[in-house]
Amino acid sequence: MKDNPISLFHELESYVRGSKDRLHRYMYACILEQRLADLLLLSRCGVHPEDRDRLAVRLASQRSLCVQAASDIAEGTQEAGGSTPAWPDYKAAKSSVTQKRPELLSLIKVMQELRTPECSGYDLCDLEVCREDALHWLRVHADPSSPPVLIGVRTGGAFYAPLWASVLKQRWGNEALYHTVRALRKPSDPGASLYLPEELSMLPEAIKSDTDIVILEDQPHTGGTVLELAGRLSVKYRLNKPVWVSSPGRLFKIENGRLAKCSDRIPLNTATRKRIWQMLGNSEEVVEFLLPKLGLSDARPADLEAVPYKSVPHWNDPMYRREVPFRINPKKTPLFIRRKSTNEPVVFAKFIGKDLFGDFQFHQLKKFEKYSSDILAYQDGYVMTKYEPGLREMRDMFVNMPSAVTGEICQIISGYWKTLLDSCQVSGGHPVHPLADHWQAHLGEMEDFIGRKLPYDLDWFEQSLHTEWTSSAHVYTSLPYANRYGHWKARLSAGKRLKTYRFHIDSTWGGTSSIEVELASFLLENRVRPDDFRLLVNQVKKEAESLTIGAVTDALPIACILQVANLLKQAKGESRLPKGLILSEAMQSFEYLQAMKPKLSDVR
Image (cartoon, rainbow, N blue to C red; front, top):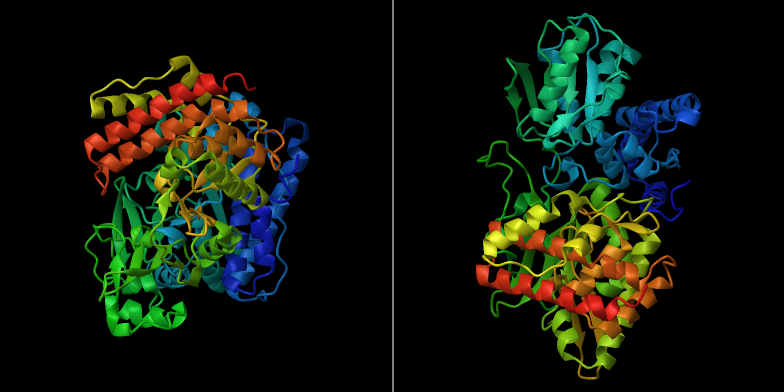
């Protein structure tokens, strides 16, 4: 079966085909290589036994073409307008895969997602720095007698490996090849890395014991991912020398089972102008840079200032390296541009990713303009929107406004999920929701925190959390981290004109969800009444024929556990929500569920 022709991945392919940006084409080739390598791994694991050999040959050939395309772009030998490889139309039935090989579940989940790599999302670097890293290693550390084996750890390492290979080819020609491997998670120990033997069997069968191996990976934190891989490689090849590990700007050598740092520098191109995320903390510099781009004709620079959105500022100064490992992380740096004279915000800016991932995310975001504030500019991964004062929470309107108003809200907001279905679908879905394995632990932790027992139907929750959403439409969305009622607001003007808003639409750090869970979360968070519940589901059903009110009702417990997980995170994180507020929110949500179930149980 083929991916949906309007899937998220085909949207990405179409976007890259229309782009003249060389970096876009390079990163897309790296994304494709990872997809094909994952498919090849599934094939090696016997997922397609009836066509295993032919499929493996075809996938290996296609992967080689992607490797060549990435290498050509890295070396500057492919024109920016060169051909863009097509997205591979293969997929595996998730239930059958995980029944045969449970350890493949984490691979299946990864393949559903358009994961933003750390280098583009929250541990930023300029990719061209990898060339300088390779040149430094070549001058100072390389054994000149033979080319090293380059191994990129998917996801991040797959973007660095072609750049390293392009440098090493200058000395060793086409012998300087690279490979990629996927670090999975052990079902029995989610914190541990797992490299399948079928994956390692696709690496060179034998190398000389004194050959250099360089593992390319994102910035190491615990180092467990690369240490596990290095140990496996040392045994496979009977190495008599240490394994090298490189992250952008950093070089390590593995000695006595530990990462020993050999070199360290800021992974940014010094010839590039400063980006917004390098200016954070300097209000005047941010305002001076942004003001010409925002169209604020009545604003005076001296009256404007940039201030953090949150009370605890997460400004990042790449030149001041206090943290180990140091991260250039603008993920948590939303900001306001506000007037000093009135303390009135006029612009809201939020980082959604850089390079291809941020640019494509912005391309997708523009499709939801009907449900967002006016977009003023997009620069350096930041989306700048007009600040909207005086909005009401949709929950308040659903609880207190007459049915004529709430019905209109349902009519308008249904288009949000139609747009999701049009441009953010992913093939298939999780056999069960990712929260299924830990939902009782989340509830137990919440009950311990609030000191109260929550009212819920154990059988209903157990059935809901372990439902296989096989017939559902699945989408890649921001729901995992933007599921709270505060993300939904509206304005009813004096002339009774209604405007609805969905905040944090971007799925830069999102995940896969079924359309039933999407709707259930909205209904739970906003305390939607039964009649409006039916109206909204029936509106969305026009775009998703398999959708039923019964299925959305069955997904309500999942939405509730999503909320519980989010509240627990907020209880521990920067916002530190008061215990009383969390108690009230949790109890009201569970009571809403208990009240809604019988009112909708007759609809299947």
